[in-house]
Image (tube, rainbow, N blue to C red; front, side):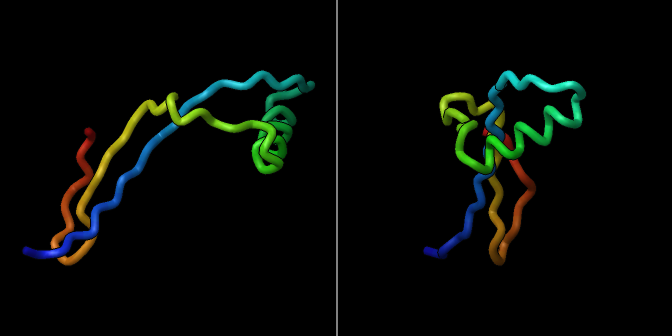
Length: 64
């Protein structure tokens, strides 16, 4: 048996309402709220996941 290192990546998507004058301001507000822990993404909202072997025998990413 050999040991393999497998990387798993998930993309979680969730929508939040932000009130602002412009979209760039809304993005800044959202980033600040995310960093403060006010916007928390729900793990049940996973939209995409993929995995790959990243060790001595690397593979392409595959969706699962």
